[in-house]
Image 1 (tube, helix red, strand yellow):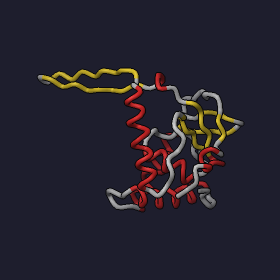
Image 2: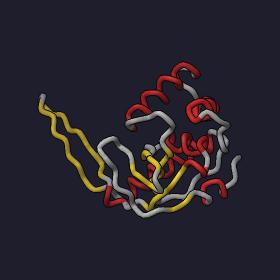
Image 3: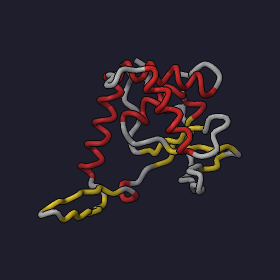
Image 4: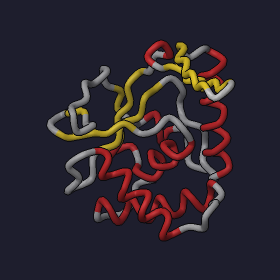
Length: 164
């Protein structure tokens, strides 16, 4: 397993502002926000602390969307994320990391990744990552297989060895 120090070495910053391209400008460099799930956590672990920043996350900034369908009518309700919702999300992320052979990461943060060279919009990063991931893995990889593929992808898109 990776050591917990891996994540505590990640610089903590004030909440950034995001531009129309989906980037936050931090220290003259573009960063994109990682998804708040096991997928985003595996990407962060593969990228390593030098390519990451984290900012305190406030549950109130998030919402939970519930879709109700009855008699052909669809109604969507957004509610503030509850403490229990956040606990479930964090527990699922920790489980995903553990299944990949990694330690859980610190809770209560939004995780930001340095944009790879040549990426002009954050959506390009996700498209490229998903395309490469599909080419490297089975249709339903377990977290360990997913992490192995993500490490290879990170090395390729940054043009150097992944830091883990």
